[in-house]
Length: 404
Image (cartoon, rainbow, N blue to C red; front, side):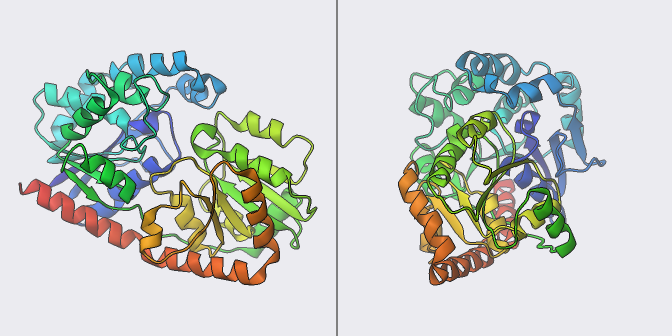
């Protein structure tokens, strides 16, 4: 069986959950199937005879990381002209068609809503394959509120699905695929209301935990972090509409402990908003992105991690932090039923409640028993959601799909 991992969403996002899962599936499924990858250059995929790496437009990348990307007109134009019409892909459509025709995939795994236009193009050109969609963007849930909402535009304008309502658009989208993968039970229930072609496979991760006291000491020195400081970490995209880091910065500002540090790791269109909110507070540290093994050392110097998101599919940074035995503080929107059903009780707070988050921040730093219980929950989380179980689940789904 020949499996093609598709991630056109990597055109604008070099780093993120979609890209990491794409790379992991490409790497791990090779044990069972002939596996190929098609997408843009990321840090997670190395060029080989089994990969089709498309050059990325620098202009589009720069626009994506600016406030311009949040403007309705820009987003509508981008999804209509670049995503839906497959313009300026970095490779001619006919060349892509020829390369995919040579692969002759039995199954294509789609990691992004951006993939839909290309999949439809392939179907129109009579390329025969079965398709699987992974709902990284949670378009199945209430995040997609209307035709021209910021989350609805990729679905309606970007896909070109003609429909009478957003509900109808979702139904047509999910029914296009032979199977849909829900990353959490909320997604599963939502997709199940549109089609029975859905299964549940949560993201999992095998984390390589590294430690180097010399490097960690140099990182502390660079950012003026004392070993007695209590370091709160946020790591991810600076994209407030989803990640809600503004609530974290505001909550942290209400704490007055001079030994607290807030380490904000990442980049994105909202970073200037966060810098303005944190202006004058030298306890808040912006580092930009860290690549590769350096992320390990950031986790190692941190005392707790906060993920204040408005929504997540299944956040990989939670699993990374858990593997490093760091206490987790998450918004109630992130604290899915999936954790609770496994007996994992993470510390959570009401998503936009700055005062509640401030109280939790102060408690984790001062209540030793509270912190120890949080560390135990992280350890449980890391053991349960591991990469081996995830890959076995995908193997089972793909084999069954190929035989039907």
